[in-house]
Image (cartoon, rainbow, N blue to C red; front, side):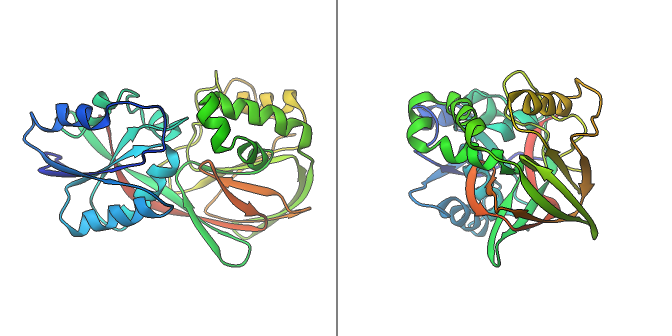
Length: 301
């Protein structure tokens, strides 16, 4: 796809990240390139998805999203089914999607991808989840169940505003004391399994947000499948070992089962907290399926 956009619509989440002159930085990139651009400011949940859909209807060539992974997810939802690409402008606490795709952290450099002739678009998978009977969600990065869900519950907005990305570390430490192993019944592409685990990850992307661990190297955000990892034992050592394994630093362990699937159903006893792309979704059971090549995202070539 040749970019050369004439009109870019930018969706901005003003609650994301740290204060910075967003409009000035974007104008410094788009105006010299002769690009017409405008913005929408989110104020409530689902605004970003709605703004993205409206931008497509209004003829936008690119829709940019300034915010964290939750904002990127909402805009991606609005673009799904169209050929309008997403321009990721990292503005949140962790910005894992930008890390996954090699997008620069600095706002002006990320914006410049839209006008750089060396940029490309990449078809990225998404996941669709149903929590309980009918609570539907979508994600790009991963779903965390058990310890991962509890960690996000504890890293609330007040903690993020105070400590930034370190809030997830604090939340993780607190979750270590409260997380308990649960009995899981899993169905992966029609095959049933049973296991006990303190943490289950259903990953679409390999970036996992752990300092010092780059990415789960076997996972491809564009391969049309999801990857499942279960951590059986509680405590810092088993979790650290699991994340090291994700990054390819250790040999595969039989105590941390891993599998690939397109459709997944998980039931836990007792029910476990769930987070999807950093948002709290409720508690198990959960049904998940992959949506191949769901959205186009602008990336460095």
